[in-house]
Image (tube, rainbow, N blue to C red; front, side):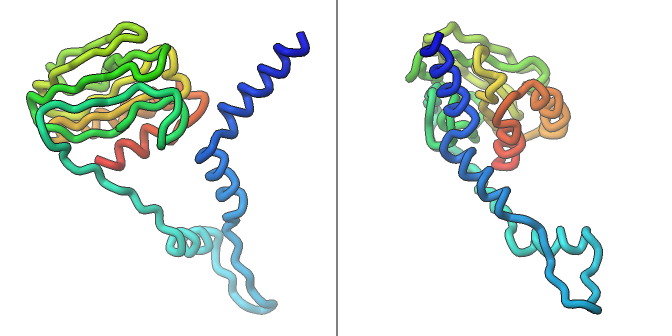
Length: 195
């Protein structure tokens, strides 16, 4: 009993306060939009304060470049540069007809397309647990995929094949997907903004 409580506390700490996510939480708590004004000075509205804070610290989004070659590897990981339960790379731009090799680098993962988050006419896929799967993408557009057992932790990935002809549909569908995440809810937006 004593060990199970300790394990539960450790797992909660691991998933809720892991590396970069914890760092960002601390930064968010320290970044308070405050404007200091002397008595008698006009401090402006709350909207102006928010705008001035946004102007001071703009968020820079690094866009993903077209990946070279016709074959690409995506690792399924428990932990990577982008956090826990992650595909690496999580965002890819490839050409029509390219093949993606999903590698089960860590156990208990798979890669599966998400219904409603593929281009019209594209074929879906669903890999088996702990197994590599290769998928050839012949339809232009944006594909969003997941690891079935870890989707609630936002273990998702995004691939743009050719032009992002279905981006507005993907962004609309992402709101519903995001509501199923218990952590890393910002991942889908971050990934889509990299395209």
